[in-house]
Length: 119
Image 1 (cartoon, rainbow, N blue to C red):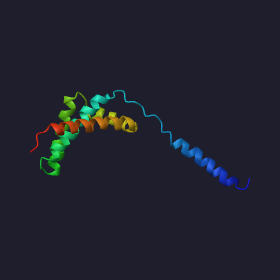
Image 2 (image 1 turned 90 degrees about the vertical axis):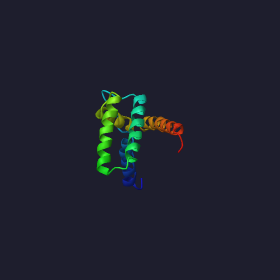
Image 3 (image 1 turned 180 degrees about the vertical axis):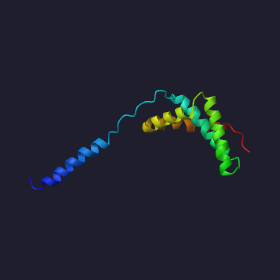
Image 4 (image 1 turned 45 degrees about the vertical axis):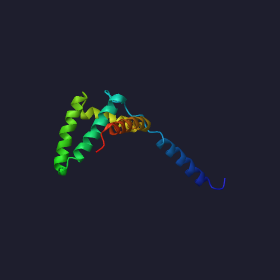
């Protein structure tokens, strides 16, 4: 064997990087919002954000308005910001899940846009 050090380094790199490719499975939150509820909350959050951005208020006022509106939104959906964030984090780690959720969110928002009267 001409270059045993090179073989050893390559083998070590392979072992180390193969472990990096397999992230540990995240712990599922005790209470996880189901996908359909995540879609409804996300649609409402994005629509709320758009309304606040178009309100023409100062950044501080917009932030306060969004915080107030989002608290009411979580109450309407019988959830909390904490539960929503934990669920979002869980789904984000599972990229395919979040991709599917956002596919439905985008379709829902687009469908609402089509129904709006043109000015």
